[in-house]
Length: 137
View 1 (tube, rainbow, N blue to C red):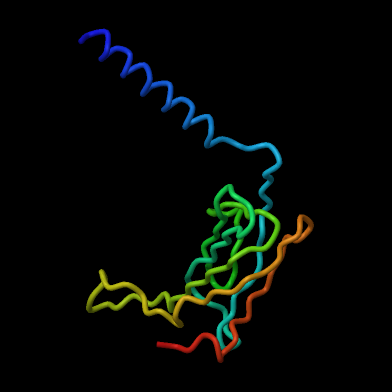
View 2 (view 1 turned 30 degrees about the vertical axis):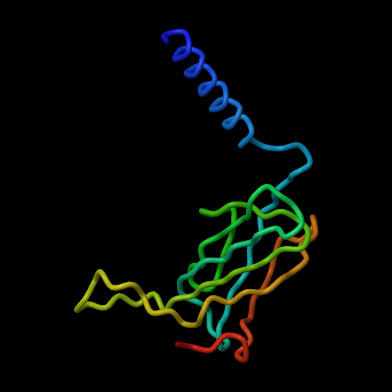
């Protein structure tokens, strides 16, 4: 019984090490930082998030927080992969309710989703949310 337990523990540890090594950088998968602006109805989105999810490649997506209408994956986010990419944008008014400070900020629009093609040389993107696709709540 001790021998079985010891082998099981060793096997689990080996799988854990392989899992950790597998989460590291992969050859051929190179992330690049993106920055840009996000506007809604012509105004900068005060607070939100932009996420970039590769459609054709593995390796996980990139993301960046939106602050005062600007985002930068190098500043509190994660770089994106080139190729066909699903983009998801959320935006909030950023106003705290003094009568209920725990309440979340008000969403400016339902989550906006689109698809773009990112190339390796692209580093700046502007998102001007179309009014017909993103209506305020």
